Structures are given as C-alpha cells and as structure tokens.
Image 1 (cartoon, one colour):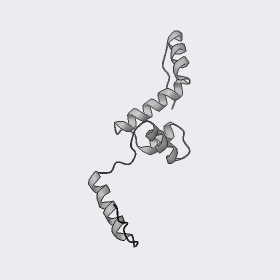
Image 2 (cartoon, rainbow, N blue to C red; image 1 turned 90 degrees about the horizontal axis):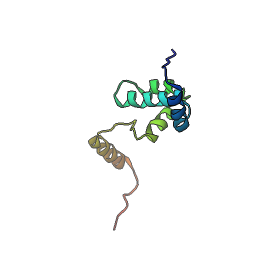
Image 3 (spheres, rainbow, N blue to C red; image 1 turned 90 degrees about the vertical axis):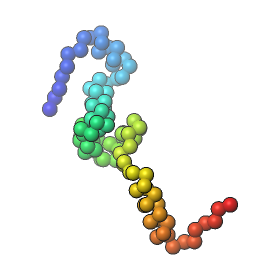
Image 4 (tube, helix red, strand yellow; image 1 turned 180 degrees about the vertical axis):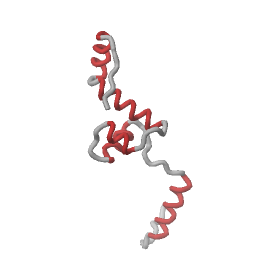
Amino acid sequence: MSLSIEVPDDVRNVLEGRWGDLSRHLRENMALDGYRQGLLNLAQVRRLLEFATRWEAQEFLGRHGIAVFDFDPSELDREAALHEAADPREPRKRG
C-alpha cells in the first residue's frame, strides 16, 4: 500500500534538511508510536521498516528506548533464583 500526503515545498525542504528521507522518517515514527500504543507487534514493525530480521526491529526499538521484552520484576527475580539453584558451582562468597 502506498500513502501520500501533500506538503508545501518550503515545509518539505525544511523537514528534509533536518530529517533526511521524509518517507523513512515518517515510517519510523509510525512504527514507534504504533508499537508503544500496542497497535503494532514486532513483526509489523519489521515489515513496515523493511528489516530483514526481527533482531533488527528489536535493535531499532531499543535504540529509541522501547523495551521489547516486558518482564515483571518478580518474574525476573524468580528466574534468577531458578538459575542460581540450577548452577552446580559453589556460590562465590562476597566480602
């Protein structure tokens, strides 16, 4: 699908001077806003921005301060405890 908008030449020139490729800039911002609002999933962000892999999409979101993995802190604590319990090595003594 193609989407086009009318922009006065002087406005386009100013924006392109600052942002470069307007089409890319707008797609990136749609992806960021859509993901933040829960409208787009990671696969949709990847396709919108024409990334080859989901890792590229995750990296893009991360560079913009958006966590892709949303873990509850108690879940992380539980996982850490399970990992610690499963580690056969002696725990290091601190101090």
